[in-house]
Each structure stands twice: as structure tokens, then as C-alpha cells.
Length: 617
Image (cartoon, rainbow, N blue to C red; front, side):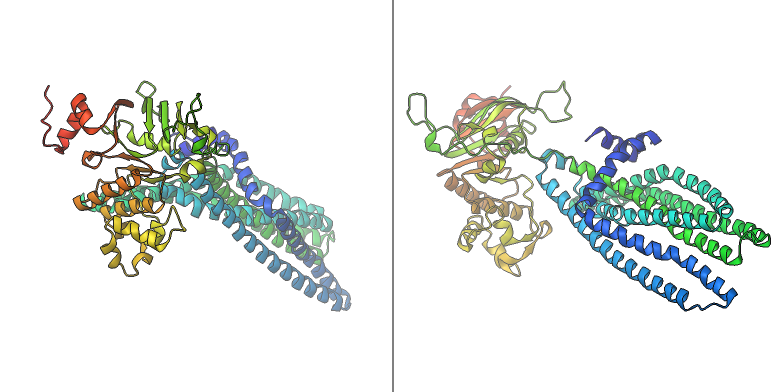
């Protein structure tokens, strides 16, 4: 997050107070974001502005034609021409306004489409730590509600502002043509009102920014609560969570009410100013008519221009308030757009396996994956604390089963994240086929890996789509084979539409979601299979089926598993024991039982080996 964005976020959360200097520092950045969305459609905007100018010109000409009508009444002249002109102006102005409205509405929808698709694309291509550091619901509000404000700020606000300026300048020029004295009275009132309205804008921007931030926080909290609804209900925490979510809603409402008050104050100042100008003009104008300085028709035309001023002045006020909302949304969208994207600077793949050999020319098949003296520390971690990984070196053979075990927090999942390139090491290197990851693109790396994450999420869609998610071209036979291997056949049979049933996380048990996730990996026919706690919620029979599937994959490729249930990796070809970010020992199950006390403690604590007594002091 940039310095400006951090400042915006801290002010919105109430950690410190906003100042006018803070608002000024962020305005330029936010305006740049708004223009970035409008720039591709500048040709349409120009046409809309021209149409608006023509419609405004038609409105501006109406009082002058009205004056001609009144003058014609005094001289009994024919009114056919001025009345015809009035009709033409009415039709032309209305037609131009209609076309402009349709153009702006269409343009607004295109801008919101571009904003939403761009944000979604950026979110899904951002680095995993960048996205997971924020609440999903809070990010959703930026894609949904904040983009609506961007739409208004980049279309209606711009056109309304320009139309308002044209209308204001044109009216003032024609009023000066009619009578300079009356114009002076009008300008004094409007300038004083304008200064008052502009002075309210920083406070309005602050209120709208805070309201949007609280809406985002509300969405993030609510999304998390709904995700953990069973836990919330079992803990009888409905009232507490309602109160916590309501706090964000109330805070947003308070900021929104403050913004509404400021908006209405600005509009009221504008309306009062126009009405006050009319009152003064009636007095001054009547006096000037009595002295024959101006005619009655001139006073009527002048008053019509004053009434016409109401529209451009209100347009300017509305565009400024709408623009403040758009600028506030731009600051929140900027946080998403400045998330660091995944690095994908690898060169094309360095070659097939047969290209690898030792210095003497004898083919030596390198490990498919290797960590060499890898160090990693999470962002924001205490500098005095030990890193998550500290000099880890690990070889994963091209075929066989490698299990990674150790106490919680030992660094097991961090190793998985490095292998998947979700993270990049601070020191050392990760290799694929004997070449550093820097020589591979991210797509090349992940194309060879199937991953079953610990939370085993269900992707929105049908069960078939979930199973074929990593390989959309999988055949029905391949999908069915994975279903049978993970003992999902009976569950699929009772679904309304079988594999084509729309599923979500609430429809499937934790064990079923884990089986779907593993089946998804098997359908992908991976060269490398990574399993992170894939057996945590499986029954004995299903765990045995999974073990058989692991052996099958390990016969032709590499399997890397993380599990606290050591029974699932007891037959692994190699077991890597990690502790406090370091590799403590590597070996098979029987070897580690003999030489490592920590491994014996892990096995004994889980009572998975009756031949192992509790460790002695």
C-alpha cells in the first residue's frame, strides 16, 4: 500500500484526524484513476459534451427570443417568427438532451463493465499474500458498490460540470449584454454562495470516504461470519456478531448522514442564493425600469436568465458532490489496482529432462523439485523472531512419495507455497528439473503441479466443473474414475442432477469437500501432486482409498504431502521432519523412529504405532 493509500485508510478507520493537506495530497492520485477509466471513451465524451453545449445554447437563446416576443407585443408586430424560433429551440434542445442522455447511460455501463472486469482480473492475478491479507467481502464491495460511484464520477459529473460551466458563462455573458448593473447584483450573491459551497467540499469528501470504508469493513465482517455460521450459532454468538456488524453499519450511516447533510447544505446555499438574487433583482430592476434605464422586456428576459442560472449552478454543485464520491471510491479502488501482481518473468522452459546430465556426460536425473538453502520471512513479522524458513534444503525425487511432518508452525505450508510460487524465497533458490524457478514462467510451473489445499474449497459451479477444474477437457471416464477412487460414487448418485448438480460448500460435508478436492487433483493427471492436510476429515475407509490413489500417482510421478495424521504418510518413500523453519531429519518411518526423539513424540502422541512407547525424559 502506498503512503497516500495508507493515509486514506488510517483516516477512514479513525486512527487519526484528516486535514485539508491530506485531502489535497490524495486528490491528484484519485483524479488520475477516474481519468484512466474515462480516457478510452474520450471520443464519446466529446460528442456528449458537444450535444450538451448545443442543448445549453438552445436554452440560453430562449430568453432573448422571449424578449423579442414581448417587444413585438408592444409594437403589434408579427409574432410568427419568434414563436417559430421558440418551437425549434424547444424541439432541438430536447432532442439533443435525449441523445446525450442515451449516450451517457451507455457509456456509464461500459465504464462500470471495464472497471469491474479490470478489478477482477487484477485481484485474480495478484500475489496470494496481497489478496489474503484483506477480507474477501471487503474486496467484493470494491468491485460492486465502489465501481458504481466511479461510473457516476466519470460520466454524469464531467458532462454536468461542463454543461454547467457553459450554461453559467453563457448566461452571464447574455445578462451582461442586457444590463451590467443587474449582472453585478447577481454575481455578488452567486460568488458568495460559491465560496461557501467550495469550502464544504473537503468535509464532504472525508464523510463519503469514511462511509465507503465502513461499508467495505461491514462486507468483510459479514462474509467471515456467514462463512463460519455453524461456529457462530454453536457458540450462541449471533447477538454479538450482529452487534459487531451493526457497528460498521452505524458508522457508515453516521458518515453517510454527515455527507447527506453537507450535500443538502450546499444545495440549499445554492437555491437560497438564486432566490435571493431574484428578490434583489426585482427591487433593483423595478427601480431601473422606473428610471427608463431598461425596458420591462429586458427585466423579464434578465429574470429568465436568473432562473436559468438555477440549472447550471445546481449542475455544478451536483457534479462536485458526485465527483467527491467518485474520488473517494477511486482511493479504495487504487488499493486493489496497486496490489503487486505475481511475477512471471521466467524465460521459456529450459528443456526436456533428457537434456540434463552431469559433467562427465552421464545422464543424471535431478530431483523434480529442490529447495536449496531457502530462507523466508513473512512481511510484517517481528525482525527479532526466527524466519518461517531458515536455510531449508530439500530434494523431491521425480517418482515416489515425500511426506513433510512437524509441529504446527514448523514451516510445512510455507514450503508448499514456495513450491507453488505463491511466495518467493528471501534467500536460496527453488528449482524445477534442476533449473531455478526464475528460468520458468509461473504457468509452466503450475501446469505440472496439482494442489489440494488445506481448506479444500468448492468452486461455484457444478460438481463436474469442480472435478474438471484443473483440466476442463477431461473425459467422462476420467472424471468417473476419480469419483470411484475417492468413494464419491454413492454421493453423486443421490444428487438431483448427478455430476451436473450445482454445489456449494454448505451442501457437502468437510470430508466430502476433501474427497472432491483430491479427485479434482487426480483428474488433472499431475506430474507432481501436492497435498496439504488432505486427510484431516476423512474416515478410515476413504483414507485407505486416498492412500491407494497416492501410491498410484507416486508410481509415475512425485507426491508431496503434509499431514498431522502420520498414518497417512507412514509408508512414504521419504519423510522430512521440520521444526522451527529448519529440516531436522530425513528418512523413512522406521529410520526416524530409531534416531529422532521429536518424531517418536509425534507418533506416540497420535497413538498410531502401538510398538512405540511414550518417549522417556
